[in-house]
Image (cartoon, rainbow, N blue to C red):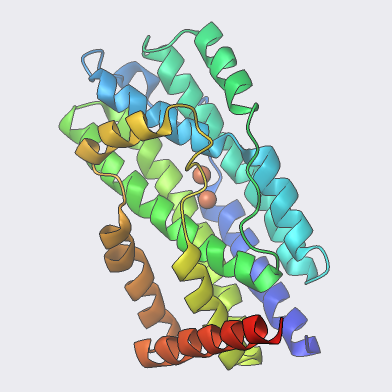
Length: 272
Ligand SMILES: [Fe+2]
Ligand SMILES: [Fe+2]
């Protein structure tokens, strides 16, 4: 990568960090109106909160995988990942606090849940820093869309505490998505063709991080669908196409890149 790559990314990181310090720092124990939990909020909302907590809780694996992916790439990406881990941690804290303070779960159940989660590992889905950055961009944006929908559901239940939780988490997630988007833009300016190929590749293989590792995921998803989870259609409509548009990447470029990848795979198979 060029010097320009490092300089531009470091500037992006500083802007991200400065804005986070100035506008986005919050305390999960103090900044939620805990006395405005609605005791009548249904169990389905608790299952959603618990499932998101489950996904957020593979943080050790995300930090490890994320840092390994960007370790040799740039200082900005390494420092972002460290800061990102701290922000994500608060999402786990606040969801745990909600489940316990609302009486939906006991503290003991939460410890048991955490132990069960850690029986599985999240493996990072892509090797390179570039693909992991693109994955991060899609994943954070999808997570943002999910939390905004959950905020609306919480408002319908007139649970102000839960609505505040989702609104606050969503604000972090969109900031993460925007940083990864900036990184992707820098990658595009360095190597447009290669980055477009990675965009096509990551989109094709994309799935949310909790799939298959959070206990009872399928049952949980069926509850969450009723509450408005993100399926493939919604992913394309709310995440993929809007991001392509923001990046100025055309569908034509992506189709070309996907065809080139198929050709390369065929050639590699033929050479074996
Ligand atoms: Fe999060
Ligand atoms: Fe995030």
